[in-house]
Length: 223
Image (cartoon, one colour):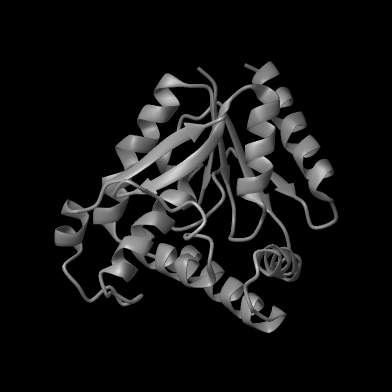
């Protein structure tokens, strides 16, 4: 089995780029950020905010997160409900960042992610895939772009979904998310020592996908 680990900051296009790259390679795509968003949604529905001043273990004990592949596309289910669309909001992003900093949540989701990689050719993206989740991945990529470009892309995505947000709001959330992800004590966002950097600031979507495919091809041929 071949495992490709793609890490990088929020809004770098990891999910959309990885999804298409996986489809072209015939791999399964695993969006680990969606798993954390689902858990974050559960905590929000339980009345918690980003301080997570609540019974974390108690809520997790009553949480069921599941990945199902429908027509080749990953859908995320929380307690039996498809929440794939509900988890794509700025609030869900902030809650995902908060819960992902807690070791209980990371342990809750870790084995699920590793099992998928053991049993399938996968492209898995997140914040700590190459450093923690799949430290022995065959290919490691650090996918990034400038904060300004990432905010522009996320704003376009949210507006297309009918959400009323401004560039300044998205940019501020993006910068805060970067800081929180890079400075948390548990599994902070960082580039793995053996990862290849892929900066897509100057690339459109199709060129970004091509870049990832080129890196995967080059790195797997070395082995």
